Image 1: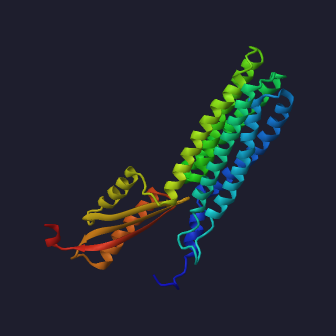
Image 2: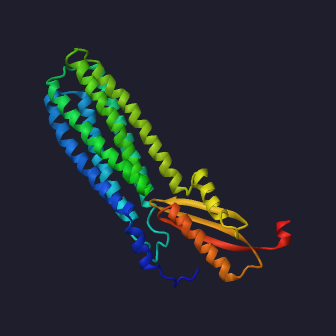
Image 3: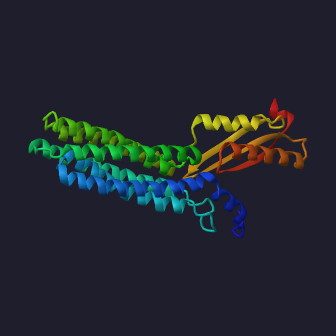
Amino acid sequence: MNDDVKVDPVKVLNRTNQPGYRLMKAATYASASVASFLIITKLVAWIITDSVALLSSMIDSMLDLVASLVILFAVRHALTPADEEHRFGHGKSEPLAALSQAGFVAASAILLFLEGIDRLITPKPILETEIGFFVMGLSILATLGLVLFQRYVVSRSGSIAIEADAAHYRADLLANLGVIAALFAAGPLGIGWVDPLFAVLIAFYIAYSAWEIAANSFNMLMDRELPDEDRERIVAIAMAYPDVLGVHDLRTRRSGPDIFIQMHLDFRGIHSLNRVHSVTDAVEKEIMEAFPGAEVIAHQDPVTEEDQK
């Protein structure tokens, strides 16, 4: 490639102005805002109730905020247009951020596990459980609204960073339900050991979520191919054109919000260059419509009658 080739600013502008990209930014701000709100409410509730399950939920929300801020800056960087030094864009910042978030999630699981074990050994009474019920109910509503919005954003953008954030908050929903159950058991039922037990169980679930986030991030950093169903769909689109005799050397990868697709298309050698070029453009356009945000490059290979035998 000629080093003097310039990035097309019009093409970049059109891609970064896609609705999915704007939604990604909105999702990061929503995540940080919800985490901040939950930290304040859970802190007040923990001071009043002295529930270790509530403390664990507050610690998780604090880590949520840190992770959400990391995701926020990573997504903003990932959406930075391609430049002379980064011709493929800055999408790798997304899986890097998701990988760091997995570390935050794992850390919260460890802290929660240790605190739960300590409270099992030295139990303490739970006070003012009504406050805890109210705060956790409020937390569930706020988290549920955020998760539904994140789910919508992922469906429009395919962002792995937003998906990682959503996975974390889905784990929070289960954790919040566990805290409510623990408060009920420790308060009205008087079964104090349930509170730290739920904290330990939630810690294991959060640790599993961290593993899933890390695995998905690692796959993207290693340029893993798109799923087989997506690759089959790409081939099917190309082969739907009668002039295309075959597809080979298909290579795909995802980099944050961007998808890169490269392939070779077989054409009869008797066709004119204009005809082959027009069909190739049509194939690339249809694939880009099927995979929003994708960059598609198709190379044309001439095929003789002898090659077809």
